[in-house]
Length: 164
Image (cartoon, rainbow, N blue to C red; front, side, top):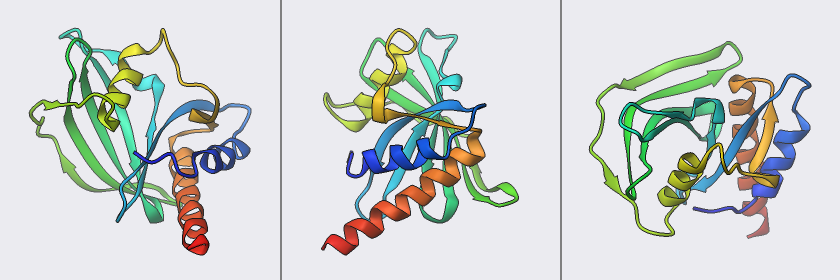
């Protein structure tokens, strides 16, 4: 997980918020070759029938491409799994579904201190503990949050390239 530029991302996203905004949680910037911003919509964090918690993750890449992952976190063991995923493109006309995978995946074990363990902790501790500061930003809706995160990622990557 890279938090490189997280303050810049948060600043850009907060500045575009509205009075009717909802909070989204910034999970981090992940990946070297094809970096993505991870956002979590806390409104989607729910207890599951098995006693675990489910949540919706938005993996946002360049050019408004994003993947919706519906995940289940085992709050009693260090593991998680993807229940289903949808690849999308978020254009001016809204989301266009590109590919869908409704096959629940096997459980993946999480190493202590890993990005997955960080996300598991965020989901499992919610709502008793919530992210604060630069890890929270408002957006009017999911469409706006995804577009802003994609634009912010482009800006962060351009800044990093210019510094080299």
